[in-house]
Length: 171
Length: 171
Image (cartoon, rainbow over all chains, first blue to last red; front, side, top):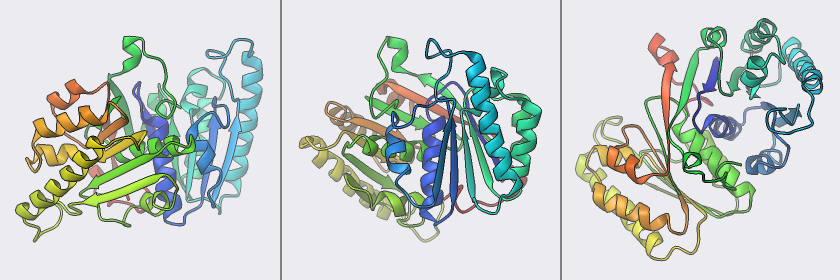
């Protein structure tokens, strides 16, 4: 099954993390590949990485939009490495019940990753595993490929009142 | 901060579970109170309940809509016990950084719990803790009280093709 968590609201990543927890709770094997997220900044990483049956990979830890001094070329190179890892898993996938591809919609939107190639890999992965792709701005082509799509829609957010990201809530 | 995960789509519970993981990862203390969920059926419960710093309570484990033979009176009694637990925490809340109230919107919608009383308790809890309330059909009064509201909106779901709930995904 191919699942997408998209939209401008909160909960795309946390829902994927809850899904990982659910899967691990049943004794399943899970692979989490994150883009654009510094390791150990997010609270959940500190627990997840200690749990059995989870393989965790992180590439392109910073996005040029968020961190100055990161060149798009550097990000593109890292995304290529991430895609190589996905291909490696897809070509030899006997291992995982669930594969979570975090923030890949952003890499697609910003053309760091080729969409057709990504969709081909995701379809291939989904033959053996459930695959969750998270991030805003999921394309219609990706949505079309998916079985289950949720839009996390912002109804109210304290950002709009100028309140800063809060530890334990936003990260 | 008062946070609501509502809407007809997937991700309300899993996002709350991811949020718990995030919070525990920072060494925070968390309280999870669930309604309408059999214990140990959901994969995430098996892991969460083993983690340090989480107190887990479950009341009214079945909803009359889902399980035949459950009387609404029985559910109302159990919801009253849940509300007593919430009051107890609210009256003496030095303990939790995050309090998650799972499926309480359903108990409000179905009048098992008084809305004004619930909103009063949630406001009281939110003075010391972040509070997440999950479930479909959140009322406007509850949304009005909250700081951060996300609607999990179903764009596509395999249920609509007649596919059954899948272990590790839906539970």
